[in-house]
Image (cartoon, rainbow, N blue to C red; front, side, top):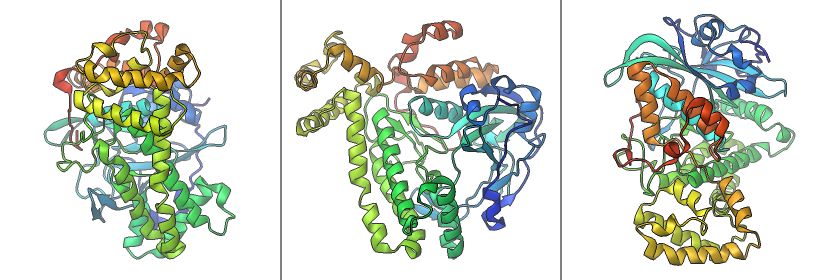
Length: 491
C-alpha cells in the first residue's frame, strides 16, 4: 500500500493526441473537507486506507496540489440524450487525472467530477453539488456490493463554495475510479464530425487496452462490438434482476466495458411498478425500468454506426441481433438464482410470468418478496400478504418446482440469500443521509450506509454494533411517503 504522493500513474489515453481531449488542471478549491472515503475502492489503486481524509489526500484529490505523475484532461465525446443527438457534450466539469497501475498490473482511471469548467462546459460552472456527489458515491458502492459492474467512488470531498442549480447548493468533488471512461458517445463524436480515422484510432486503442486477447484477430473490430454487446446485455440483466433503474441511459453514459456509469436520477424498485422511472425529467418514461433492455439495444445500434465503414453493415447487423437472445439468457439465469431454481424450462417461464403479474397486481416490495421467499414455507410472511388468495396457488407451484431440484430447504435458502439482498439503497435511507449531511454537516449516515451496502446479503453483527446499524430498520419496506420518488438530473 502507498500514499497519495506515490501512486503508480500510467497515462495511456493522453497519447491519442489533442483531438481527443483538452489538457487542463483542476481549479483550486476553498478549504476541502472529507465527506466520506471508501477503503475498499482505495484498494483498487493500492492506496492505504489511512491515507484517506488526511490533508495531503484532500489537497491532491481536490485539485489544490498536483498528483505526481498525473496528466489531467477533459475528454471529448458526444452522444444521444433522450433519443436526440447532442454534439456539444464532453467533460464539462470532469477531469481524467490519469490511470493508476496497481500491483496486480490492473489499470484504473482516476477521475474528478466537479473539478471546474473546461472548454466543454457550455457556460456552466464546472462544479458538482454535494447532494449529487453523495448520491453517486453511495450508488457506486452499493452496486459493487451487489456484484454488478460499476464505477467506484473513492471519496466525496466537500468544498466551501456555494453553487446555483434550481437554488443555492453546497459543492463537492467526487473522486471516481473506473476501468474506462470511453463511452459509446466517444465514437459518435468522431463519426459525426467526419473524423473516421480517429474512430479507427480509438477502436484500436480500446482493443489494445481493454480487449487485448483479440488484438491479433483479423476481424477484431467485429469481435470488439460483439464483446460490448455481451457485456451490455449482462449488465442490464443484472440491473433488472435487482430492480435497479439507471434513469439516464444516454449513449454518453454507456461504456465499452459494460460498466454502470454516471449516476444521475437512479433508483431501486420499491413496490413493483414496471413503468417507474426515478428521473423527474423523463416525462415519457423512456428510461423506465421496463424499457432498459430495449434502450440497451437502441444504444448499441448507435454505437454500430461509427463502425460501419470498418466492419460492414451486414456483420454488425448479425451481431446486434444477438443482443436480445443474450439478454434473455442472462436475465433468465439471474431469475433462476433469485428463485433458487436451476431447471429453467417452460414451467419455470410460466412461474416467473405469473410472479411478475402478482408483484404488479399487489405492488409487493420487490426486494423483500424474494428475501421472504427464501424462508418459505418456514415463515408465513408471504401468506399473510393482502394478495394471499392469489399468491397461495403460486407458492404451491413454486414449492413443486423447488422440490424437483433435489436440494433441501436449507440449501435453497443459502443459495437464494446469496442472490437476493437484504439491504438496498432505498429512497428514505438516502434522504436521511442527505438531510443529516446538508442540514447538520453530519456525514455519519453516509458512512453507515456505505458500510451496510458493502455486503448487502447478510447481517454482520459485529460491524452493525460498531456503527449502530439496526438491520431490521434498514431492511424494512420503503415508507409510503417515499414510494415512487423522483429526482432531477441536477439534484
